Length: 165
Image (cartoon, rainbow, N blue to C red):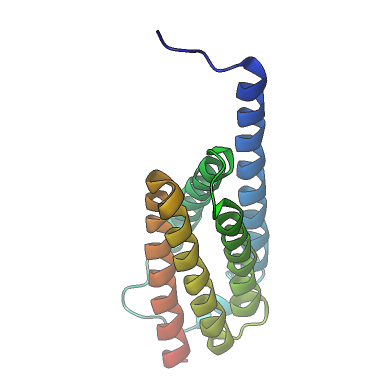
């Protein structure tokens, strides 16, 4: 016979999920707000690599990735007590701070060279987060792989823009 989860635990889990979604979407919004300061003026004037996707792609992709990130972090948070869980969540927090930092440097400061440094730090933090999440919950680790791939792609775009300009 299947045991039902206590209502109190269910409410805690739901509130935790909503909290992770809210934090991730707030970080996404912060990055988007900074991006908006240059995406209509400075950014269109830059020479871009041939593989640059249309602007309409970025918003939906980032939204989906931030939602996956929220669910992955929530799964780690609500998982059973385990050695390394706090470290995994700390790595998640670091990459969450570095994500909008890249937007500030690239779009806010309009410094693609320094943004390339920032995105490499972000990539390193994402790799560290994936490794730690994977060791605790393979689904949570796997859920961050599309984010890692997209940021690696963004790094190549960033590098191309820096090179061409």
